[in-house]
Image (tube, rainbow, N blue to C red; front, side, top):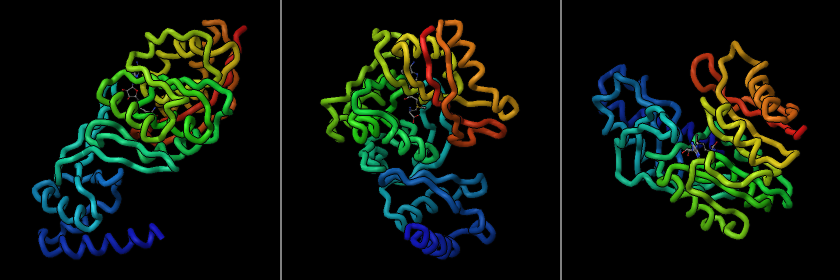
Length: 281
Ligand SMILES: C[S@@+](CC[C@H](N)C(=O)[O-])C[C@H]1O[C@@H](n2cnc3c(N)ncnc32)[C@H](O)[C@@H]1O
């Protein structure tokens, strides 16, 4: 149903813009885009930039969104998007997915459509008697599904104060205040030790630096969902080898339960998630 709708949308956009753009450019119009709530993220090629406002207006009108952002990069410690507003003003929206409401500012908070499978997987991963610690909570991307659908207790840690504001709002919006608590701190300063049955490490590039802290938070036996980015040439040994070596250094055995590819991160680099069981020796 959704596919048919998209199939009708593309020719409509093309038809309108073919009357307004120089010949040849119509073929370069984006055929894929990301819609988060009522905000659109549009990838635009260089050649189309002189017409970006006109193009954005047509996509907004045909797709019925309030704001259009030109897709850019996601950078830095807080994994913040660098997107340009090319139509509309308001970039705050509520995105509904798998029965969860995610309120966020799409221009300033990362929300990856490619991570949807992992968000959905989290919705049935935990038992209701578990304590889950999300070390890189964002707006609750991965831990709201656990609190909402598994009924487990969740501690969500988010360092960026702006993102944290949405995390707190989302806990209320999804009515999980009784079981989900948020901390606006660097997870390295989180005081809990030996408390978690399950730990989420939804981060990339430097996640290995946080393994010792995760082990400190973990109970003597726990499951860690360890995300990281890995060059293809080091797979499949990595990233488990690094995790296991670090765990050993800190007195833990690590057993790989499952390994999944989340998405291609860059040419030759993959974002993967490992489910690892750790045991204190
Ligand atoms: C890439 S986002 C991912 C969100 C979510 N875990 C997911 O996988 O979809 C990572 C989040 O971790 C936060 N973060 C980065 N370093 C942190 C730290 N040391 N302590 C707590 N939060 C941190 C960032 O601000 C950002 O919101």
